[in-house]
Length: 376
Image (spheres, rainbow, N blue to C red):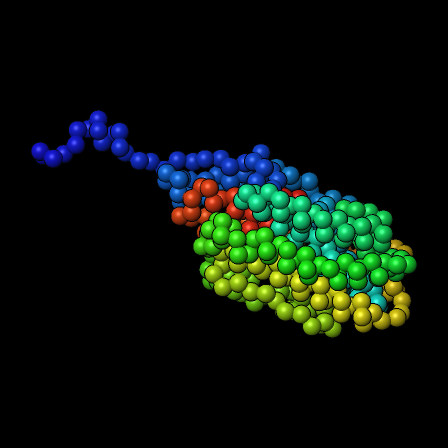
């Protein structure tokens, strides 16, 4: 045909999809995570997650330790949320033992869990903003996190991996002056969140980089089993503290922030507002702290009855569940962890389709993964 292009010209303008490795040594993947991106030009048309670089065999490791010895192992999952990890494991064992936890111990656990949630969100906030280019924001987040870590050090004696709770309750009451220091932190923290929002929430560049980016619908978020702020950013009302109440959470009045569009911006807003709700919970727990024992009746050598149990808590990243099987011996027969970071990774493919490769960093940061929890 007269208008047909020569074959050599057709070959020159022919386009093909190609694959690009992002990670596992990329600083913005927040650990040794590898995303294989399928690209059409600069548009992402597919994503395949490759994990396992950090696998340490924590589940199998726990099966070779006594019930008490296994407790500190789980701090190493989401190492930015060690207190809540510990609560999930000991809660499962306590459910298996059917031991009653003193009310005061439950209140102390809630206070520490919510402080840990704030601390985890602060690291996410600072590093997520840094990934997208807001460099000074990290210093704001670390400033308040340091105050929380100081409180934890005074209570637990550690600054990162706390071995926070024994099976049956808590080890120690808050030390002298701790409650006053905590109240002082809470008094100023909402104004600090106002500073964070002044920096980002209405920032024109921030909104351009996050609104309409990494969208996942309510239906897809449910279908992929997402949880935490990643799920609630799509407008799904599910929070273990409300939907499957545990510990002392039914005693407190708080709200569950929801997004509307399921994009990076909504997931950002959910975590910012969650920090405000955590402050409400802690204040109520401090004001209503009951008197009583710190630990329930638990034998020195634990041999739970034969059976199986599932127990979940609301981690900083989402629903953190522990499935444990007992054969009546002094060690767990089987331990399996439902880790929110691992499951939330499933949503990345949907979130990234038709997005620019430049947006990939923002999308990964918005689901707040920790590879210690992904690989286990």
